[in-house]
Image 1 (spheres, rainbow, N blue to C red):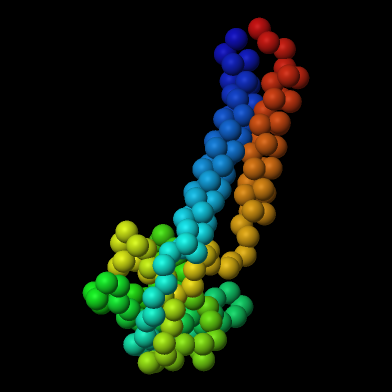
Image 2 (cartoon, helix red, strand yellow):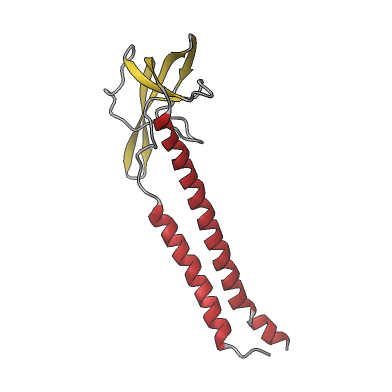
Length: 163
């Protein structure tokens, strides 16, 4: 009796791990979709003019190559109040960096600035979501892994006699 209940643990563990993987993949996918949706709202923000006050580039080794990151700081005014920002694109967690050619922004350059009308201290230089590679493939692989675990658990459970 004891050995039969222990032998059912493997398929049940497969089912549980599969469901947890599917739920985790769905949660992460929805969080990223929400982030992209919020970034899309910046396209509706009003525009003002700003001035680049500093810019520098940093090189960093990554994998087999080197990443160049451009850091930009700019000032702008909304309703006669001055603000300073460093965001290129809207992003919830990042520093507002942008992988761009070094000659794209120069000190004292006049730039368009998109600002949040409800909170003018939040601004970006480029409206819309940041162009980046799609992560959909990663989520699809994770979801397929979760589904295969669920399928393996169901198949193992269906082959064993139930007592």
